[in-house]
Image (tube, rainbow, N blue to C red; front, side):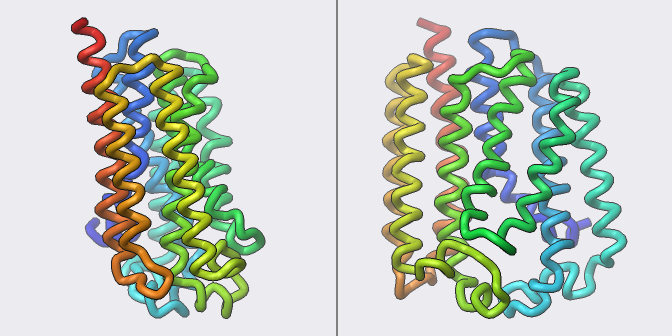
Length: 284
């Protein structure tokens, strides 16, 4: 079982899950949120990510086997048979569909196109440098999905949280892709670093993260949050600056710190900030 968790990097669920919970907290203003809702959102998020990452590992197995950085991943290393990986993806896809059904009829209907969107990401780097933005878009469905799960309908304000997540994910995925630039060039794969080089890629990532900050700030205005959330936004802005400060065009040694530790901290900070702000709002 540990091999499967390593295959899908289960700990990375921390990047998007706090955004889904934050969406549920914002939706709480309109509709009561039960522990059952939170549980099924958790199951839906974890299963969707598990199936999507498993699918990605299957489709990328031939590339992973050639890349020195990834050749020890579970499928190319032979730790997980391909047939077992396919069963894993099928099982968690079914879990996601079931969890969506538990969250409502609309969520159930939407679960099928959501899976298609998530799976399609694995092919985008074969034909477009915008694969980072597509990944951000695919993951940004989480806040919108959580909102629909709680309220039963879509509302445009939650798009701000989805756009914040989209640009946040796309920005740091560009950073992460820098370490594979030479390999991707050799294999004919597309990415922002391949197309523009590492220096320009880092600049584009910073610009995209600036828009993340803008969307986080707009949430404060549209949802009329209090000072706690506003402080949270500036903490997130500081963390984004730190992320880009520690990654240099000629020195990518801190890339894993930026990708794992800083990004996890940003997501958790957002959730704590939105929850604290909402609790204070209810007390006033």
